[in-house]
Image (tube, rainbow, N blue to C red):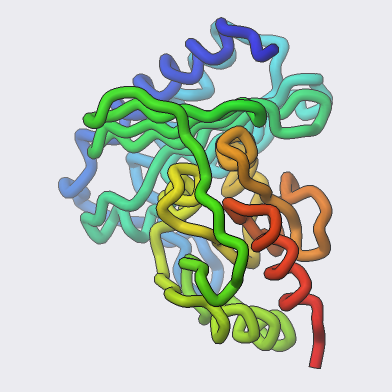
Length: 261
């Protein structure tokens, strides 16, 4: 059973991140590019959010480790490690779109054990511990449950953009996209939460970092879904990831991705 104190602490962390972020949403003066080539935006809000999260963790759980997008790693050999993305979907954030969120994940013994996506603008939180998952927001509180979808031809699927897939990965992705009922692009962490909530059937991605996915794994699995790498292994290290609401659909997606030819 997940420690109730840790579950309550998730909400404290989300509150702190939200207070750091919201003064800057739709009010940014500048955006920095942290990529040597291309465009990888970071803002004062990203940094303020992660600093707030780290301060609370170090105050209340000093023996825990931290992996964060903006400020690196601390104590990764600890049994409990927090995995943080202060704003997942910074491109949406700087565009004024509300499809971003703060990802707060916890690994125990190297495995994702607790996670939350918090969106302070819409006042929504999606959380889970791998066994159960729950929602808090303007609609009140309720359990999260994925929906059944047995056939790829009936599926609604999301990805950030097909442009991220290169070479054989693009060919594999195209095989899946060509068979689904509906595909939509963008939404970052929100797409995964919609899988957990039963509105979307799958997300297929490449190039993820651990802080992009660790927090979302306990949410989707707690709601009854599956999250794996393209080869069916753990997705906790990021890379090529599939998340599905129905195990039968998940198997079809993996088979299609790995079919070849």
